[in-house]
Length: 257
Image 1 (cartoon, rainbow, N blue to C red):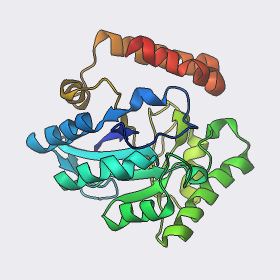
Image 2: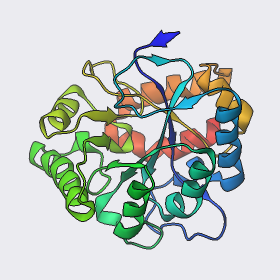
Image 3: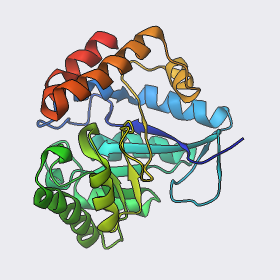
């Protein structure tokens, strides 16, 4: 069955107990950590069940068996743990980098990010400093989008035209600004009602997901608890706005995980 856009999975940390974790992670980041074993099982499930891992920039029609794999934040474990597993299955993924954190403890260096690219992975921007962009001034948004893109391009000597909007908040003006600055493929979390421009929503993979949970998410099956969480999340974002929701976000996830 042809569809207009692929299913997109959003991963963060793939941890093995050996690779150091960043010290400046946002509250609740561990709720998206998968073990190396879990991630390997997820990739095996995709391969064994006939899913094709594709790039979002491909222009031909997608089917309900097409999947795009993405990683946010640029943690060191993406290179040390996730990359070997992706190579094992012959899969390509997008890696979105927080530019100001490159080289810090627990994050990849430019050399390691370049190796991702050399191994066939796609490197994109996750902003300059991982701020909630919709809470910034227009000049600050411009700097976050423009400088992050340019810095990756200069350090890797490659064009950068993909971005993952950080922290899950976006609006139509922000998406339009990203396109104006040269991005061609824009990944978000959940699409807000006011966003009409093309962009790709993603499924956030959580740390308690075994293969069954991944399969249900791919098929669009949600438990009563998941539906309750999504409703409360949408309501909270609407009422509390960016900073208010961000303060209670990890608590909501823990309650409904």
